[in-house]
Image 1 (cartoon, rainbow, N blue to C red):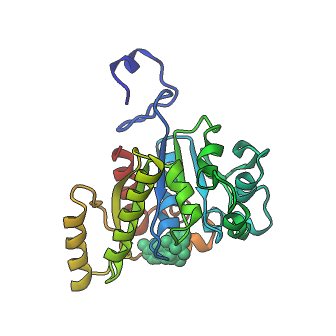
Image 2: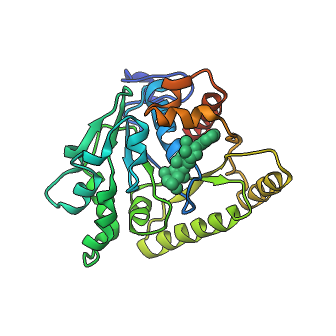
Image 3: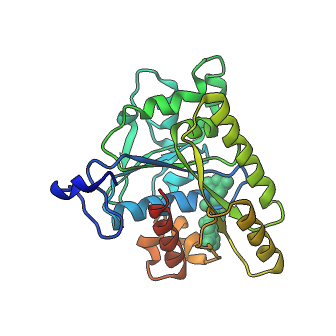
Length: 278
Ligand SMILES: Nc1ncnc2c1ncn2[C@@H]1O[C@H](COP(=O)(O)OP(=O)(O)OP(=O)(O)O)[C@@H](O)[C@H]1O
Ligand SMILES: [Mg+2]
């Protein structure tokens, strides 16, 4: 929020408990972990949908994974869709705004990805601005309160592009033995991007335990994460709930598929934390 003066304006959208005012700066939040299957897509799609529907925010979801699962989770048949985020990144004349698709979730738009994105690193290998393609294209996008990024399970060029376009990183972490390795890699990558590209506003804002099962090992790893990320470990722990998986198989958000489920409650609790974690 930018100060007291807002009280004297008529806000376009005003929602209790964390308001979206017309003049609020846009937040850009990336869900990143180079390990596969840590719930990046699940969290990015559902958190984006919650912001849009519950907070009446305008949200752009950017899928930077050639698997295209963010779009699939919203019911898009991404294989045959065009233009996609790949076209935006590789066609200098195509603005991002021309590739934005409206989703069936009110307020939530999407930059779709599909396997064509797999060619992106090679196609732009000789371009000097290859790491900044996404940031440059998104610089022309306006009218959104949030840009939310889903990332692939690797620290390659697409993820570096995300880091240069986002300011907040949320790291979903499976509470397994190698979880801490993954976190160390991300911390290192963020430090490198901050150093090499002068992206000093980039930070890891939240680390989210996912796919939790109550075992001694999981609890030990959770305790270690608390020590490594003081103040940044999410209070919400995402446990298993089959409704979350089922919702994706139906191309629906958890709110559209089973809003009463435990999965929906966990995801809502996380969305609230991210909403407040400015
Ligand atoms: N809380 C949950 N309970 C049960 N299943 C879940 C839960 N969260 C996610 N899943 C399922 O786990 C699988 C992996 O989740 P998801 O695709 O979000 O991970 P990811 O990090 O995006 O994977 P990738 O690295 O391949 O992109 C999916 O099939 C998803 O439906
Ligand atoms: Mg994914």
